[in-house]
Image 1 (cartoon, rainbow, N blue to C red):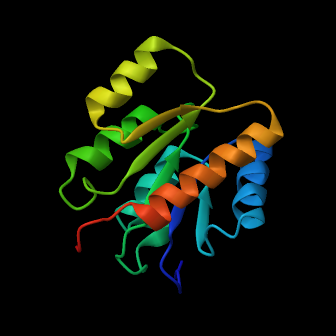
Image 2: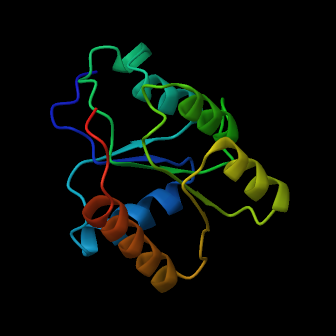
Length: 147
């Protein structure tokens, strides 16, 4: 798979409703033009490490990864662990967006190096505001080092 334009946001989410809400919220606020959605942790790792279906892609990393924790194939905590252990991907900001209010998920996410942990709002208006804020901060305000 060839990705023509650099991805600004990698959305790692398996719930179709959450994907649709996130994409609608980002589009509504004109936050990002280049969003890639992957539906499991294995695909996220393949994309980030340019392997499997993504072996031919440009090596440019996304500006931010929005990561659910409860994913098929490879769970979000394992995705986070691998990303933060590898020098090639360590600096990429990862925002966990999950329905999990479990204290152990929160603690483990920060232990592994997550940049932010957000419990998904159930209300569409709240979710839209959260996505707008995330997009504005991570894409417009946050400065990343040059690779």
